Length: 260
Ligand SMILES: [Zn+2]
Image (cartoon, rainbow, N blue to C red):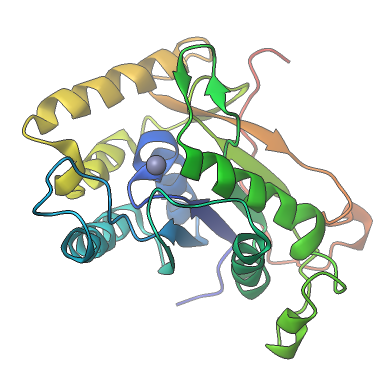
C-alpha cells in the first residue's frame, strides 16, 4: 500500500457507536487515502436484552460484526481495549489506554465521542460514552502529548505525539460542522446492518431512521446526507502550522460550518 495521505484515529465506547454518528465521514476519509484506525474501548458484552446471549458469547459475535463493518467502511485496523461494557468509568487507566493508542497511531485527525451528560435536552448520553469521550479529550491535552504524563508509555517506546491537526467530536445531536456523506450514506447503512445483534428484528426501521436523520443533518448546508461534528484545531498538543514537515500530509478540505 502507498503512504497514507493522513492518519485518523477514532475512539468509540461500543462496537456500533460510529455507525450512528460518524461512519459516513470515516468511509469518506478512507476513500480520500487516509489510514483509519478504530479503537473500541469496551467489549460490547452487555448490549442486549437477551439473558442467554449477554456476556462472552455476545462479545465474540460483536467482534465479528465489527470486523465486517470495518471492511465496509475501509477501516485499516481495529483495536479493542477490552473494558467491560457498561462499567466504564473515567480513570487514569482509561486515559492511559487511550493515550497508548494515540501515541501508537499518531493521528492527524482524532475523532472522539461527546462527553456531555445530556444531549440537546432530549436524552441522557450513555455513561460509557461520557467516560470515554472525556478521557479521549484529555489525552489530547496531557497523556498523549506530554512525556511526563504516564512515563511508563515511554518505556513501551511510545513517544508523545504532537502532530494532531484536527480534533473531531462526534454526535449525538446536531453540531456546527457539517460533513457531506451523500457518497457514503449507503456504506454507513450497510455497516450498521452488520451489527445484527444491535439492529433487532426490524433493521429496515433502523436504516430508515438513520437515513432520515442524516438527511435532516444535511439540509441547512444543502447536502443530501450529512453527519455533524464539533471541531477543534488548536491547542498545546496540536501541530504548529509553521513547523509542518509532513509534506505527504494532504487533509481534504474541512467541511463547511453553515453558521460561520
Ligand atoms: Zn454506545
